[in-house]
Image 1 (spheres, rainbow, N blue to C red):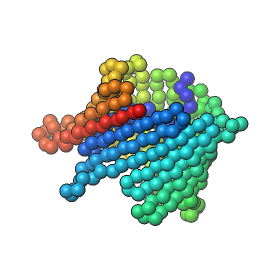
Image 2 (image 1 turned 45 degrees about the horizontal axis):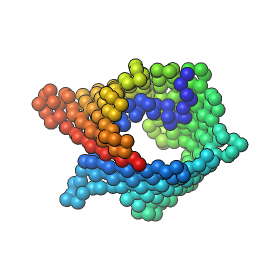
Image 3 (image 1 turned 30 degrees about the vertical axis):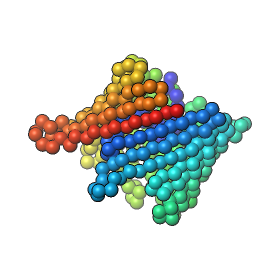
Image 4 (image 1 turned 135 degrees about the horizontal axis):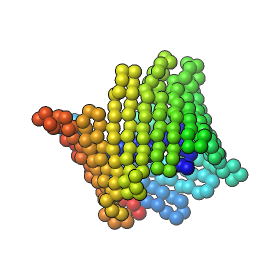
Amino acid sequence: MAKLESYSNLTKLQEDLLKKGYCFGQLAALAVYTKHESGLNTKTSLKQVKSTTDVPNITGTTYFKFTDPRFALKQEFQTSLLYKTILEFTPEKFKNVKGKIEVEANRATGACKQTASVECSSDKTKSKVAIGSDHLFKTSIVRSFGSFGAGIDFAFDLNTWRFGTYNAAAYYFADKYRAVLKHISTDNKAYTFGNLVGSFYFVQTAQTKFGAAATVSSAGLSDLTVGFQHALSDNKTLKGRISKNGTVGWNLRAKVNQYVSVTTANQFNLKSFCSSENPNWQLGLRVKINQ
C-alpha cells in the first residue's frame, strides 16, 4: 500500500513528472548545494530570465538550514529583498506532531507576515492547522480508507468571516497507480463551483513512469497534459510531455559525476509548426552542483 500523503502532496508525483525539469522562461540557471554531517545544509541558486531592457535580469536565492532530530532552522535570503525564517520543532514524546513558525519580511515593501502551524499524523490521518498575522486560518485533513482516501483544504478569513479557499480531494493509491480528483476553488468572494482537476500516475517499471493531468472548468475541458519519464541509464533520465494545445516538450537530465548534473530542455508548439506559423521554440539549461 502506498504511504499516506499530506493534502499538498497528494499530486506531487504527477506534478513532478509533468513539470519538473522543464526549465523554460529562463536563459540559464545555476544551483549549488552543500550538505554537512553536522546537519547544516546550504543552497545558492542564480537564474537569468529574458529582459526587456539592456540590463540582464538575474535573480538569486540563498538559504541555510540546520536540522537535528528535534528541530530545524532555515534562513532564506532573496535578491528581491525578501527574507524568510522558518523554525520547526518536534517534541521528543510526540514524534507524530510538528510545530512550525514562519516569518516572511519584504524590505522592498516593508511588509511582514508571521504564521504558526501544527501538523499531526497517524497511520490513517494527516492534518495541519495554521494561523497567520493576516488573520487567515487554514486547515487541511487527509483520511485514508485502505487504498482509497479523501481530503479537505480550507482557508477561513477572520476579517471577512468567510471561506476564501474551499478545496476537496478524493484519491486511490496503489503500489503502481495513483489517481486523484480535486476540486479547486477559484473565487474567494463568492461561493461558486471551481475547477475539477484529475491526475493519474502509473509506474510501468522501475525505469519507466507515466503521468497525466486534466483540468475541467465551468466552461468545459480547459487543459490536458500527458507525459512520461524513462531512465536511459543510471546517470541519464529522459522526460517528455504533450498538452491539449499542441505544445510538445522534453528534457534530459544527465549526471556528469557525483557532484554535477546538467538538465537541458526543449519545447515547441506542434500545431503552429505544422501550419508554418511561429512554433514558439523554447530552450532551457540548468546546472546543479552538489557537495
